[in-house]
Length: 398
Image (cartoon, rainbow, N blue to C red; front, side, top):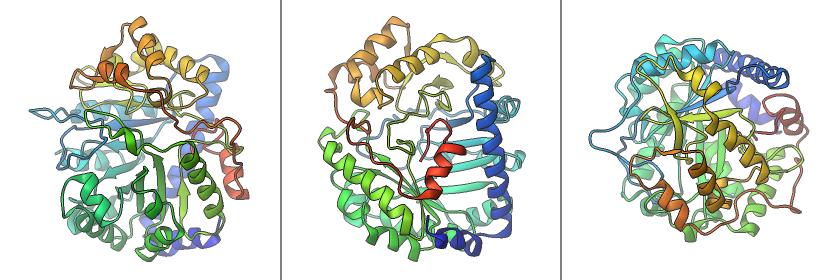
């Protein structure tokens, strides 16, 4: 890792943001170690991290998105969100990814952040609603890292997002986050149309010039009613993306993350290892955000969450099934086998559009991140160490 990437965090983030980031690093380490001990000892299951899609309301309608907006919008209540945080704390789990829709539409979002100063939240947002007032409020808390979605430069953002002003508004939100001293990230789902402009050193340098501290690369996974299958990466582009990541991690002045490969370049899946699962806006407890099938739902205060994780058999079965498929993305790589598994386990379609099972049946298996024979080990000693010994003991995150 380029030391400048760390120096920029120390010089660009407020002391409050740095303090909470350090606490998160320590608490995250403890959460993973506690998770590993539970798994080895056969103790009650609970993930190390949780992803919460708190509302399906959004101001955009992007191609390839799996979130279906409803009228009225579905959203987790503050009681449910607090119940989730409280249950997770029993297992030393204090990190939560906050997704949508657009989570900034949730009226109780800031209350959740304020009420849980010992938790750490990664806020996935399109940035169009991220203004100076919000940035100041989050900076005063310090326990939130905004992760702003940039799905391409101006032309591709317009096409993918369906609006002319999205890129400019997202960049304005990004500027406010950096100005407030927040630990600021950018994310992108890499597809065939945005590959050349986002998988480039020029783009990384552009983000550095904007003050961004980290970037999280995802592989585009076509889902939902408008999947754009033709924009999914092929095997060659997956390998190019992986090669780019391991090369740029050594020299780029920005922290570069992914969620797909271990230190040796073998495919991994956070859900398959049980490190992370997902809760949807309608309270469905799911394997991951795009796996819109459930065997259990939260009650009014989420007091049944532990029981769902520890008694409901669908998630445990999916973890085993995913491992048998090479820890590739089951939705992309093995849709028909996945559908058979879900039906055999009496899973419920939790998409909100009653279309997830039909979409699986209509899919053609595609390449995702598992490329047997094409493994590319990490070149950066820091990333190798981190993946093997820190959050990445199970190789789940990059």
